[in-house]
Structures are given as C-alpha cells and as structure tokens.
Image (cartoon, rainbow, N blue to C red; front, side):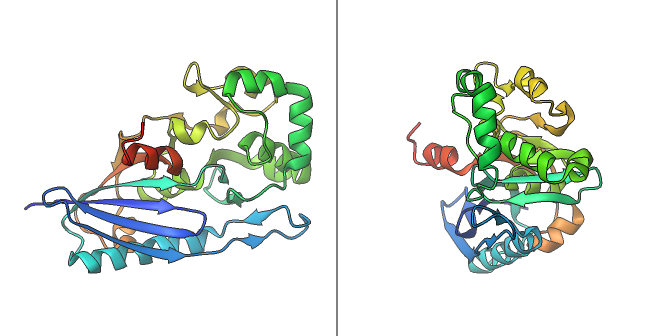
Amino acid sequence: MSRPWLMGIDLGGSGVRCLLVNRETGATEGSACPWRFSPAPGTFGTGFDLDLAALYAAVGRASRVALAAAGSDGSDVEALAISAMRFSNVILDASGKALMAVPNTDARAAGECFDIAGRWGQALLETTGSPPLPMHAGARLHWLRQSDPQAFARAATVYGCGEWLAHQLCGVRAMDATQASASGLFCLRTTEWAWDLIDEMALPRSLFPEIVLSGARLGELSGQAREHLGLAGDVSVVMGGADTQLSLFGSAAT
C-alpha cells in the first residue's frame, strides 16, 4: 500500500501547526491550533508557563484536522518530524513529570543570567557563540536550583518543547544540534555539549540528552500516540529541529 504522506508538526509562539506533504503529487494540506502562554505567578511579569497537557491536546487536534483536509484515514502517513521554537525548556524528573515547562518568552532567570555572565560570560561566548541569555537552559537550571532546590535535585532531563513532544510520541531521549545550540551550553566547534562549562556550573551531565542529527530516525510512533494523532500503522518519528533553522532550510536559504 502506498504511504505518500509525510507529516510536520510545528510548535510555535502562536500555536501548533500541522503540515502534510504528499511526496508523490506535491499536494499539501495544513492546519493550525492557536494558543497563549500564561504568566507565571511570582515572577513579576517576566515568567510564562507552558501548559504541556494543552500542548499535547492541540497537537492531536491539529493532526486530525490536517488529515481530514487531506482525505486521509491516517494509514497513508509514513513518517513525521517536529519543528519547534528555540529557547523553550521542559525539565523532567526520572518519572517523566515536568518540574518546569516554559516557552521562549520566559525570562524569569534574568537574575541568574547576570550571575552567569559575570562568572562565565566570555567563556560561554567563545564556546557557544552566544552571550548568556535569560532564555538559555543554563540560566533556567540555575533559577530552578535557587528557587526550588528539591525540584532541582530531582531533575533528570532538560528538553526543548519539541524534544519533549518527540519523547512523548516515541519514547526516545534525544536533541538535535539546532535546538541544543539555543541552550547556551552547546559547543559549536565540537557539536557536542560544552561539558567543561557544564561541569564548572555544577550541572549534572546526566541532564543533557544525546545529540542526534536532524533527519535521523528516532523510533516508531507508540500506539497511544498513533491514536492521539489519528494515525495508523507503523509511523517513523524523525528528528526535526529548531524552527528558524528548519524554515531557512525549507526555503533553500542555507
């Protein structure tokens, strides 16, 4: 049976989008499901929270709307990949419970960012290509350690929202270089985590997922995920990446 459709899921600042591309005919169908981020209590307007349950529900709705527009019953989709905003973070404990989930507009770690800049700013700039920013995972991990030491002690994985979704869909713990480079803790020369700086900041190495190339197959969509998205059969989950870099690639601007 022909399975010509490929699915792209985009987690953006204004909502979830789903794109279906028919690689045989070139036809496309898409859908969008808007969202807004809630201000985080106690952050004086600098922090915003990401509702992961709402995110996951929106992904399911967007997928089903796009499939309906394409006249697909979900059995003719071969693979999917995820594009996501940079500078979002989801920090999980070992059971998969979210200890912190924030979008790219969250700047609650501004104070911690100033501290990081004073201690490691030049080294971070030379290694990562970016000065320290409040939206970096490093600053947010420092914020969590200062504001809730017990939660920080339980932290097991730091993701962006796209990697979190991929993990929900296929159970694989990984991140690509485009998203890792938005963490403030990724070495551009080695295309690996900046382990020396991570050690200096006393951040556990175990927090950081394996780096996997964008375009590599991560795994197979789980049964629960297939049902949620309205898909059927064996569907490959492929590593996507950061929305900015992927949009440049898609427009042949690289």
